Image 1 (cartoon, rainbow, N blue to C red):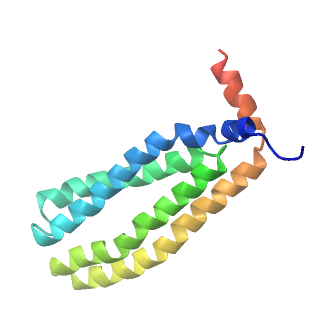
Image 2 (cartoon, rainbow, N blue to C red):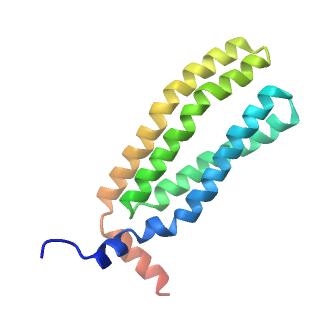
Image 3 (cartoon, rainbow, N blue to C red):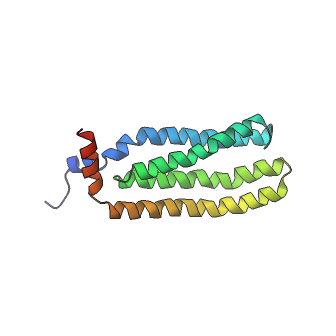
Length: 153
């Protein structure tokens, strides 16, 4: 009797199913950024057209992560997947971005970027995870009431 029913579990994880498409689009964006950086390493380097496009797209990754993390506050599973995705994106950046600068003869920048990305790969997932947990605890239950209020208009 104390076990939650399958219907209750499905309702609880509904946001995870809804955000699956957004997660896929975000993943495609992240893969594009990584692949374009690797292509820049072997072609034009930091100053080429591909790198300039990549520098415009790179901030969209953070926007997508912020939307995923704070948009999925109702779903524990979606939040965990987003933090794992963030870690999975930062770890290749530790190698790819400094190597891109190294091959463009920007050695000091490459070393500093290696140190910065190493720190960021730990800091950003931790910060977003901590903010997510604080917001989940603070607004537990009231998010459902707000969403029902706004969708019933």
